[in-house]
Structure formats: C-alpha cells, structure tokens
Length: 133
Image: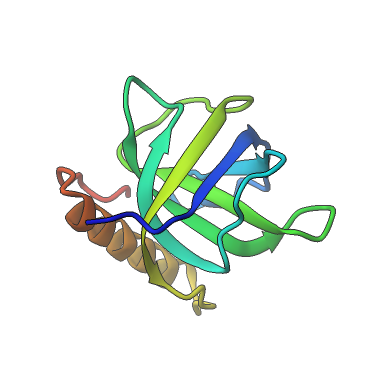
C-alpha cells in the first residue's frame, strides 16, 4: 500500500492525559517547523523515533486545542508503552481511517479506538494484541 504523501514531525509534550484515562495513551506532538499537519481525522501509519524501527500507530488530528488554538496532533503507538516525553517522533500517514466524531460515552470511545487499532493492524500487517481493560 502506497503511503499518502503526508508526514508529521514533532516533539512529544504533556497533554491533558485523556488517552491514558481510556487505556490508549497518546503522544501529543508540538509540531516541528515545516512539518505537515494532517487535516482533522483518524489516520493509520508508521511512527519513527520509538524503538529500533517504524512501529504501527494511529494519528488523531484536530481533536483538542493547544493553548495557541491550533488543532492537536496525537499519536497512539500500537502495542507500545513507556515514556515518550521530549522525544522527536515522525509519523508517516498510510491511510485515513475516518472522521473525528463525538461519541456518547467512555465505553463507546473505547470500542471505537479498539476498532481503529484493529483496522490499523490489518492495513499495516501488524500482529494482533488484546484490547486494554
């Protein structure tokens, strides 16, 4: 599958911790000068800057607002846990999965994220992992 011609590059900064609260911690990116900015949506792709090689990941674009009023770019690295604060990450978009939608409750949000992770794994040929509790 040919990647879309979009790459996002940034340094991981502290966010509100919402991803951690639902069991899918995201790395909030302060974008590098000249980096691409994905339009609002959920994307599947590869992240670099974590581990030895590219890892499957989701990019969530345009959900929350940074203090400067810009839509936030957040990355969930599939199957990885650890501290990413201060690291420089690059995300290469492979496919746009869907629009950002408002969900009615936490259970619906968890189910949607699990579905997005499964779609990402399938698109990228990554092994399956169990969903978090």
